[in-house]
Length: 188
Ligand code: AMP
Image (cartoon, rainbow, N blue to C red; front, side):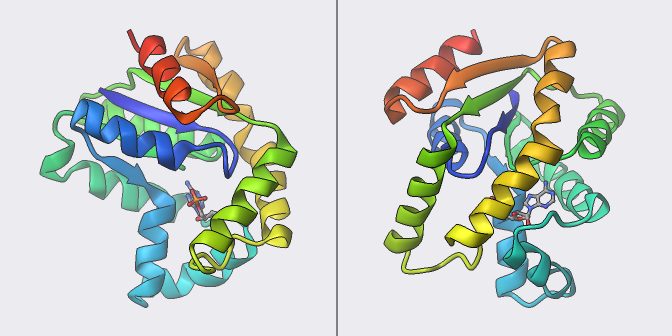
């Protein structure tokens, strides 16, 4: 099973990805987690990405496409994966299509998780509070920037995948278990 989870920050992509990891026995590939790990480890990539991630902008398509392609080649991805936070631009989606073609693979579905903007702000502020400020980009000002970047650069992927017959939309305002059930039903 090869899936993409699409949705604005705070919609619940990470939460659902973790549940689907258990259900399908395939890994979650989160470009955000990979970038945060690189930043924490102060690798050359992390040093380059830090300021961009901290202000809520997108890291270059070339960088994220490279890290995701390498990650897909690891043995635990042989049965599939759940992409969380990638692709985020039309260019990344095109790159993903070509990357999968080259590897002889294809996507089984793209799950769009929708949510109201005001609820997203509230959820992210709570996440920041609960994590003790673990993420430098989880504050209201940067969140508003991330939501604007989502609307401008990532939301067009909804039509992109709808046109390709891959899009399934679920309501991310429902309780976590109901969202999971809706995703599993959409994948049958
Ligand atoms: P996330 O954890 O998915 O919310 O990602 C956190 C931050 O990492 C984003 O605000 C971007 O700065 C960066 N990032 C994550 N995934 C991507 C991507 N696919 N393309 C560009 N930047 C990304």
